[in-house]
Image 1 (tube, protein in one colour):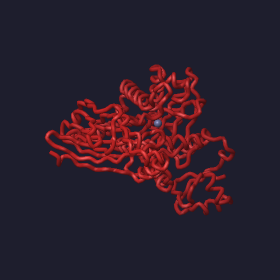
Image 2 (cartoon, rainbow, N blue to C red):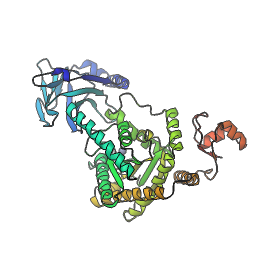
Image 3 (cartoon, rainbow, N blue to C red):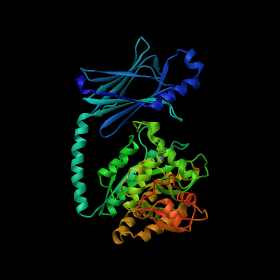
Amino acid sequence: MADNLKVTERMKNWGYIAIFCCLLLAGAHSFAAADPAVITDIQYWLAPDHVQTIIFFDRAVQPSYHTRSNPDRFVLEIANTKDLFGDRSLDVNDVTLQRIRVQRLETGTMQVVFDLSRPAEATVQVLPGLNDQSDRVIVNLFDQVAQEQAQEERIEQQQAVQELKEKQHHIVVLDPGHGGHDPGATSANGLKEKDLVLDFAKRIKAILEQTAPNVKVYLTRDRDYFLPLPKRTEIAKEYEADLFISLHVNANTSKKAQGFSVYTLSEKASDDAAALLAEQENASDILFGGAETPLPLKNDQMLTFVLADLSMTASLQHSLEFGRISLNTALANLKKYGIAREGLKRANFVVLRSAEMPAVLVEACYISNNREEKLLDQKDFRHNIAASIANSIKEYFAEIGETRQTPQMAAVYQQEAKLDISNEPGDQQRMHVVRNGESLSLIAEKYHIDLAQLRQANQLASADMIYVGQQLWIP
Ligand SMILES: [Zn+2]
């Protein structure tokens, strides 16, 4: 049965770098003391087709692992380590995993034994301690039977999606951000972003099921487990979503920060706070092990091509239109709570990058703001947020169903979005739509302006990255 266990390890380059830095920082302590590493916590999360176990350490470790049969076990070994809680056994009682046993051998080596209920495929990932995250070892046990079942369900799902399309129904994929060992933002009172956004998603789904028979809602996750960022848009693509909404709750080091905002994808952020927020949200995969290789966070070139595609298909305009509707609806709905309009903003979010459909990221108030945190803790308030997003979805589909968007409308939305995010002079300018064969310098010449000015006005990182149909602001 041991053959059923295929083991792979993904050790990231930056993991080594981080470990090296840790050694430098820990300095003399690490070298002088041969005191054992300590397991500080063990957590597990049940996803539909796998169990994820996270073992937390007080320092960087290098585990080895092997499989045993009769009965099936997966064994992780870490030399010179002890458990804060001593030898122990955690009952999981899942279809894949019965229990996790922690035992220290006489040699000082720590064994973490996964007693399997049935064959599973294991992956081991070593994550460095970054930011406020400690060093972790992640063990994913993929249940082969569950994976086969999931494959069958996927085929059934595809048929269901085709039927919905034939009936001209609209498909929305709601993406509750974070999950599992990635809590997202956490408040001083222990309120977690991952729980709040899952609650929003379930409420929006329930409201639409009752009030919008022509809208079908799917969730990227319907329970508490970690989902890597690219997987989220992959799910939206599988469902052929007409609209993708990633749900989040904001946090800021300044407790004064407050309000409701909606984001669309952009190479450049609309302001510094938006840029910082995108960095925080994008860090999820790096901090929690979603990415197999470090993400190209600043890959402007790739993003420009994504934007080109988006613009061609009018997805970006539709994203802006949904953003406008949802922001206005939410603020009207939340007026009685005194929620401020933070705006329709833009930033470089990984989760929006690969969405091929209109896609927005909602930041529903600040968990770091005392007043808004108290509100977020209230069912009524959460229900109001969910109802406003549900209403926005209905309004959006009604609108785009009636009037297929014209280029003039797109220009209005872009103008509105731009005005919403900055009051810099120069926003009320002419716009040029790039035609075949035109280059930036040609356009600059045409309007008798400086090439550098033109680039700056359009926040273009590279002169060559314009495309047919792109709208350029003429300063
Ligand atoms: Zn978030």
